[in-house]
Amino acid sequence: MSIRRGAGVILGAVFIGALGAALAVSRAEEEDPFCASCHLRPEQTYVGRAIAARAGRTVDLAAAHAAAGISCVGCHRGDQSLPQRALALTLGAWNTARTPFVPPDIPQHPMRLPALPEAGCWLCHIREPERGGLQPGELNPVTIEGFENHFHTDLLQPDLRTSVRCVDCHRAHQESLEAFFTIREIVIPACERCHREVGRGPIRMGP
Image 1 (cartoon, helix red, strand yellow):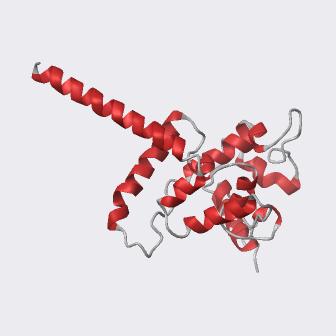
Image 2 (tube, one colour):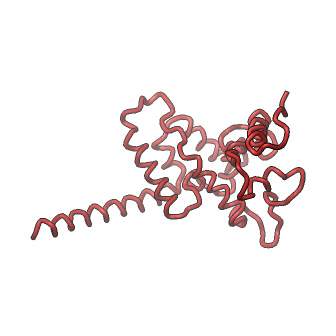
Image 3 (cartoon, one colour):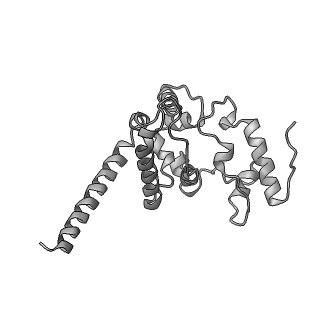
């Protein structure tokens, strides 16, 4: 066997092994306990809330999604396209590789790439709202125009130049009793930031 052919066989075996591992991990990630097994705090707390939510106790936005049958990875893999799924798997592999070098008594994996859950928001609530629970023909509350919803419809405009996104107001893992689990102390600064960036709207809305 020539060196070139031998190298090709080895590379092919490595590729098949990597693909098999990726598929196995993708399947395992559908179960929240698998995700929690590689994370310490605060993720184990979040999974605990998700489990409680299935019994009817929703205390944050992620738990409300869990009650609707959406797993952790359902939001953390983005819009489920192949590039974003590969990106999420790569991030998971990086977190796995760095785990032995991180002290076990601190939060191990701070969220990176917030664009992934943001893309998940768009997938289920804008692009394919039936994923978000809407029935065929039912009005999508996210896209209804009006004063009480102008911030959502403005964010859908392709020419709007703002860094504010869904996850800036709707924090998935922050406990709240408010409607849609929004918290004034988080939402108002996001509103003001958007107003400053687009050059219109009040910039001193809070006390």
